[in-house]
Image 1 (cartoon, rainbow, N blue to C red):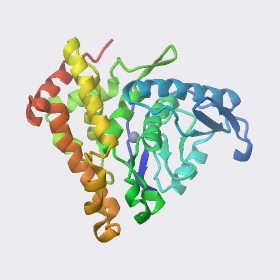
Image 2 (image 1 turned 45 degrees about the horizontal axis):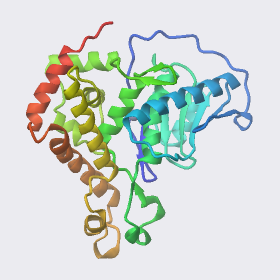
Image 3 (image 1 turned 90 degrees about the horizontal axis):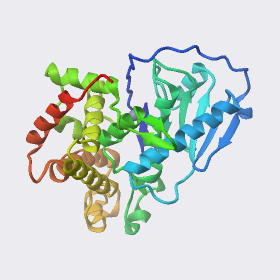
Image 4 (image 1 turned 180 degrees about the vertical axis):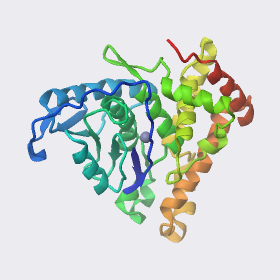
Length: 338
Ligand SMILES: [Zn+2]
């Protein structure tokens, strides 16, 4: 899976094997050139595919339901830009696209912000992962990139290339945590319910905690774009989002939702309180962008992500370490069976 920031693609490979899914037969579609791909337009999504009109429609409907689920967590803007999905009939076609975008083999799908920004995926199970799950995962990356970026202050726009007028403010752990959370969601009615835990992620996380191999929360939350994000990091990121969305005690449940909302809001502002005065000294000293702008941006985001977690989610009642202890106990108590 791939996510990239401000036009410079970065590849993060999330090899997540859903061991409890059965491999289905790969359908054989009649060959047709991509220029004659079927297109289905739903209110927010435009799906292109060389498989069949039914797949085009099904993928768009899947994404509309996913979007309703995303927007229950995220405070979605009223007007969204068009969201594109390209679903390929063969793995070979997908691999060629992935290669062109600089990504290696073995991924089940990707979102690329390179214009025209789109999700790309083969329409088949990949390593046991259903295409719908890949769509729900990549759809989060797409929505966050298309609608939740931080707009730099108007006063500095002339000093920056257009590709840097909107920057990623949502940190890596939250981007992947929300994506992993939504990939395991189930369709219900016209939306999604993520009440059921993503069981492969949960089992993995419980094993990591039980075997004392779980990466510290501090390490995961401060991870920067461009740094390796391992399967264990994904499991923790999923578990953090799950834990902030679910608690059996109603007051605790509400408090957790509010904390996640506050954190999301802060991340939409890239954790700036007053961007007009805070942004220029760090990124435009002497009126020109710093030479390693992208690296500096990601570094700052990693630091701020951790500080905000300590302040808005764990605090003021608990230290990060106390909160983490409680979180681990909660994860271990979650049932892994029906
Ligand atoms: Zn991802």
